[in-house]
Image (tube, rainbow, N blue to C red; front, side, top):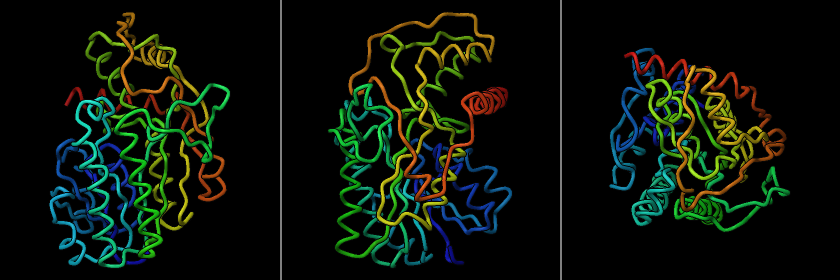
Length: 319
């Protein structure tokens, strides 16, 4: 990347705040954009303290017309588009709200980028944008394509179609990373990896933990630092490609519960509740294309990632 700044939408959120810090530590000028509806300024405290001269934060809703003026003033080279509504349950309850952020928000980013000739858009998509694979299909690769089970998944698929359309119509370069279940520091209970944050917080507080369904549903949990590394690599590689980012390993919700319980000394059994609408039973991705196209592989084991997440959560609870 050149001396032009980069923009991170959703900068105060879970993945966004980790990405901001990585980009600053790599020497970039970074413009963080977030409306703080779900993100928190506290997530950017280290970035603001250590890199005040190269970091600017702008509080704005990407849907409300402020992006074109911001982009005209700053002339960004690359946009990492992470701003999104990520709660599957909320998308089922309020699909219009979900689409307004995930579809119209993405269109606003594309229009602002087109106006100033942004070199590259790196888009954070989700495995939740695809439907239920059968167990013999796991891990799924980029050829897997099944209708989404939730409005959230639909909205993320629509955004992908707009990226392809803007490439054809306006020559905008992009790479989309379809992320497995991301977890790590700064995570809230929303999103597909939010079960880690939920269990960790409740165990540290000695509160009951709820497992929805039978607990045998499996996920591909990938640590946030590994995901951030993939996003950074995508700024200069894999044009026009959608790549899956995950570990290729399946962990059941009950296995996750037991691992966190052992690490925290949590003595209680989980409380079971009915399965939730719109969620797949099994999910796991094959990231070999990302290895070829990005030179990326996950390096953090689940044990290492959970330990780091618990250390962060324990520090937050004491603060």
